[in-house]
Amino acid sequence: MHENISFENLEIWFVTGAQLLYGGETVKQVDAHSTAMVDGLNKGGKLPYKIVRKGTVNSAAEISDKFRAANNDPKCVGIMTWMHTFSPAKMWIGGLKSSRKPILHLHTQFQREIPWSEIDMDFMNLNQSAHGDREFGHVMSRMRKARKVVVGFWEDDDVQNGIAVWMRVCAAWNDAGGMRILRFGDNMNNVAVTDGDKVEAEMVFGYHVDYCPVGDLAAVVAKVAEADVDAMIAVYEKEYVFAPNAAKSGPDHRQVREAARIEIALRQVLEAAGAKAFTTNFDALHGLDQLPGLASQRLMADGYGFGAEGDWKTAALLRTMKVMAHRLPGGTSFLEDYVYHFGKHRNGKDAVLQAHMLEICPTIAAHQPRLEVHPLGIGGKAAPARLVFTAKPGHGVAATVVDMGGRFRLIVNDVDCGAPEADLPKLPVARAFWTPRPDLSVAAHAWILAGGTHHTSFSYDLTPEYFEDFAEIADIELSTIDASTTIYSFKRDLKLNEIYYMFNRALAR
Ligand code: MN
Image (cartoon, rainbow, N blue to C red):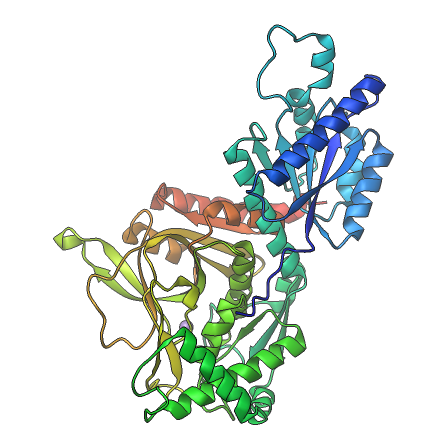
């Protein structure tokens, strides 16, 4: 593992709102309570990185200073606000106007319950979140500022989980802003859904898409030392079970060595470019021995985004999901809808087999992968090495971003992975088998109406809430397909979204 994601230098700023109306003793208590709350959140064990208390703001000037400092600090990837006392919200307009960081509005209060026998007017003046936060919320809504609102007592699991999800999304948003994607070859000829507006993508998501001639990669492959290939083969032998033809004594071991050579070179090229995601195209492999299957699988496992056939939007989204899911136990992979299984007629479930030519991330495997070599049938190159496995059972989400011309639409579907009904002894690729929610018929219908790709980015670790937060920050359309979806409501939502995104630009200022 050469994990290329880190939350180490990230922080969320915690800013408490108040005003200087209630005297010095109140100011001290607001600070003490805020410190205790931030400490409690950090020690709760649920948050993926740290929240840093950045003081209490009592005036428009202090608020503007705070947002300016946040904008200029690369460690700060989001701001949490909480109004302990009343904080007249006109004071916030200037700061919020300039803010370029995601915002979470934590609507909580310091005490869990009312101290019935003790409560007096001093207590009432100090603990005004219930109305102070509404004043703050009003101005956010009036200004049409995107934010996540989390409501509840700050020590409770659901509140801390809601904050944790948003923090992971903030990390992914920060990562997208500096992301470089390398395309080895162009989009597959004539394919519509994998194409799109790279200028608009950079304006909306922040990531940058470059082209790298596959010949440049081939030149690096040619220079890889045999000793480095030997070392890589030793790693493969430790991590995977080799099929007999792929093992050292087997007739196809040569292709495993070529695959190792490609992996070493691909890592070098991506690292030198500072790229966090990449695409390949089976039809553009000049100078390479085989389609980089094994390399793509292993790079995904390290956190790289990947899209096949030049699908750079999927490569970007997969990387973003890898960052959201950093160090969570499930697994995240590129996949493609392949073959349906209409099992309902005999009381089974309608389901879909997910696979690809080669490139599925081993983090979703239910068992140790097998390293196999088989002919590909297209692309006219040598038989490529690949890892073959079945994905584990469990709940996950499949997501995609499509370019609708003028706007991006994020489509998300809750899915339930199950074990295939029988072994697949002749299928030479990794696979997952799932039933989308609410069922295949409604989910596939809705996905098609939304214009969703055949490629998906899938994760066991994420839920639709992550994508809701992400779409809010990116200000893009979100269409979620889940247990509650009906075709009637989904069609109506798509039409309403179309109108909203048409007017949104006119209303934005
Ligand atoms: Mn494909």
